[in-house]
Amino acid sequence: MNNLDFLIPQSLREVWDLYKRFPGVRFIAGGTDMMVKIKNSEEKPTALISLRSIPGLSGIEIGEQTRIGAMTTIGDLINHPQLGDMFPVLIQAVKRLGGPQIRNVATIGGNLCNCSPCADTALPLLVLEARAVLKRSEGSREVPLDEFFLGPGESCLLPGEMLTDIILNKPAPGVRATFKKKGRVRMDLSIVSTAVLLEMEGSTRKCKKARIAAGSVAPTPLRLKKVEELFENAEISEKTLIEAQKLAESSVSPITDIRSTAEYRRRIVGVYVKRAIQELLDF
Amino acid sequence: MRKEIVFNLNGSPVFATVEAQKRLIDVLRGPLGEKGTKEGCGEGECGACTVIVDGLAVNSCLYPALEIDGKNVTTIEGLLGAGNQLSVIQQAFVDHGGIQCGFCTPGMVMSVKALLDANPQPTEAEIRDALVGNLCRCTGYVQIIESVKAAAQKLREDK
Ligand SMILES: Cc1cc2nc3c(=O)[nH]c(=O)nc-3n(C[C@H](O)[C@H](O)[C@H](O)COP(=O)(O)OP(=O)(O)OC[C@H]3O[C@@H](n4cnc5c(N)ncnc54)[C@H](O)[C@@H]3O)c2cc1C
Ligand code: FES
Ligand code: FES
View: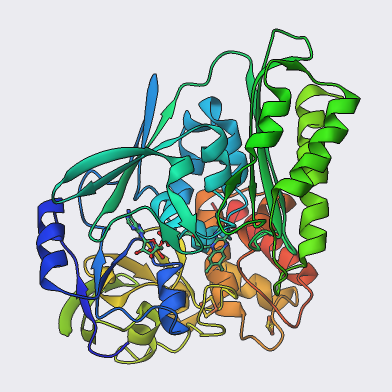
């Protein structure tokens, strides 16, 4: 990291300006991914643009539409007095992201933009059908989170484009959701993770809508749409659960790496999807 | 690129000229000569480098030095009382065998301080949770948990 420029703009306009002036520049938020990548020479930026001092990029506004600023830290999500009441599955997931020292600086935007297949904020946000607000000097656009991830470390962000907000709709009544993560130890990156959201018809077993996502089992955090379709407007039974488990196994494309094997990941994702639904429905 | 930064270190303003690629730990151990903060992994995994920035425990090995400008930093050196007297947390680690080789200790103690400042009466689960980001190769953690419980009790009694 020699001859690096470290730029601390105070406004978005200044960001666009710097982006044009410094080729090879990268954004840095909390730095918990970026600083490790620089140390290991996976990233060799010539300049870093820090997003920490730009007003308006962090903070949470609760409402019919909830807005979470990209620079909001994981700790701020956990400590927010209302966020957990409206989106318990999000808090359940981020409580297991790293240890306190990481959560105090790591941001939700950094977690998503790092585009790791194991990003812990991605799964709850995928099942909650979050939208990402992206801005660059030419203007802003909104994309479903589902279309944000393109591959490991690769998002739909254009050069110079920044994630500024996450938008969430208020969940419909009767919606329940849960998150599961398998790690070697508590603060570890996941071996497999899943989030399941169900919208049920009253207190019956009839499911109106299902949203299911899995992490660390494909090049990106992944919606398991075939499994979702199985439950759409259908009765959930022992039989459909076993079908869902098999379908989850065959919908993923895990790899073997230092954390686990492809075979194990495939097995566990099926088990987790089944268990999550059983838990949500008290099966 | 070099820049002058000013921040509060353990209650006193300090100045440093730092290069853009430096991390907070480099500034503490380098120009400022504060060697209490340790570097283990340099990648956020071990917690040996833990310091407190504006009330929150952070890994100083992942914190860009230039971002510390204007902030309040507390390191293990800031815990000593007059005449180099150990703080309650440090003394509890000594008394309860929470310290063996000592390499993890400054980081451990800073995580404990951040915990007890925010939550003076933590449960064992909360203590373990506050320390998941701090690794110790020696003690097996049991004595560390005992040290934290003892420190919490002493701090409450002293109030
Ligand atoms: C010890 C340790 C444990 C960890 N444990 C977990 C874990 O359990 N689960 C997990 O999911 N992650 C974990 N992580 C990874 C990391 O902490 C998270 O991904 C974190 O949320 C990243 O956020 P950040 O603000 O630090 O991002 P940074 O490192 O600052 O940025 C990450 C990437 O996103 C880009 N970026 C950041 N913000 C924006 C933006 N607003 N717009 C456009 N691009 C942007 C940066 O250019 C960079 O490429 C861990 C990391 C460490 C070191
Ligand atoms: S040296 Fe910073 S966490 Fe290990
Ligand atoms: S006392 Fe040696 S690493 Fe903890």
